[in-house]
Length: 214
Image 1: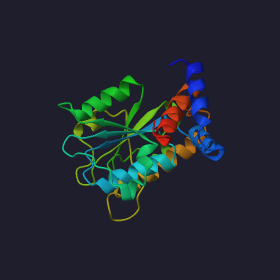
Image 2: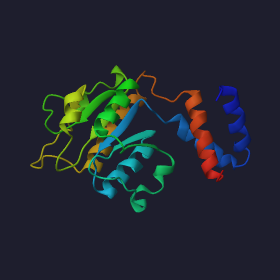
Image 3: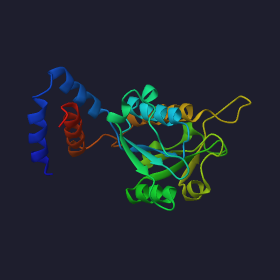
């Protein structure tokens, strides 16, 4: 759809909602980003995956990629709290190797593949370069971690600094810590992390249609 046509459709539907709701949509979209995205590999506990989804919405991350090789993702509505309405979920569950399909899709769209693992001893989250280009943070299960497929194709590996006896955080905690760190730094940087006007209009049009039950 052409830009002007998008503007016209958004303006038409915006007139059907309150000014307060319209401003809220615009304010949220100004803070949305596709510069960073999240990929979850075979998360088997619905509450963990749903908590990550909710955190993505809170930190303005627009896209979540869900890889389903062994485990099927199910939304836990009590944890997600409606966040699935505001975040785009991309599910990989129809290929022989869904992890590879996700990686190939992200690389095709110029994302760096960043594996989060407690075993990346040299590369701390606090030293990660957010300005080197768009990136996808991959998270695996607490027991298995990320697959060899992700680790072998990763452009970089990062770890969260820890100072106790336990080796790793719960996945939803790990994801929240990483998202907070990278989004805060992005917002203070000169990187072009915000959505384009066309992206904002496309997303707003979808939100308006959902809100108005079109």
